[in-house]
Image 1 (tube, rainbow over the protein chains, first blue to last red):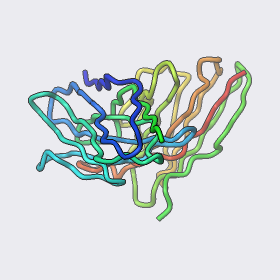
Image 2 (tube, helix red, strand yellow):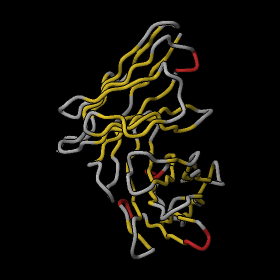
Image 3 (cartoon, each protein chain N blue to C red):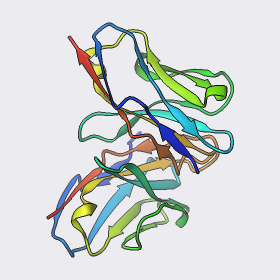
Length: 113
Length: 113
């Protein structure tokens, strides 16, 4: 069975500081990995995806993520956080068909001025 | 290009009633997936439809059902509503082919009283 663990329920960072959100996955075959962001009461916006190839992927809003197969991880990073980045972030895994994805429990990001 | 459209955005229903939610996917997308999001259980996969056929199903009781029309629009139905069905229901669309990502709508907030 596939699963996703986001160890940090809540993270607080100062504006301008760097950010890393952790994601560990369990999947029996080649994983397809995603990071989504959700603002309160809204849907999920896709930040970036990893299907294959270069293990460092770039996304929107200045985010990047690195796939490490040996550690079953897909951590999200941003060098300098903006106040508008405050939201909930979800990591997800699927097979080649993204129509059925398994999500982590999410990490809530608070940005201090 | 229009995104994924879910209607209605908000619903209040009484226990025992039934409800139908609608999702219009991005033009050209043939796969529609439904997820339930609650504070306690997080994001859980309900089912996926592709070309009018249910392709995947999650672990939900038979009270939860769905269908997809020839124009790829999808509806989900919940019968005999329970208080625990109160949730944000999210619809996602994708091309349904390999190596494609899913895009989410804004969701329908269902409250059962």
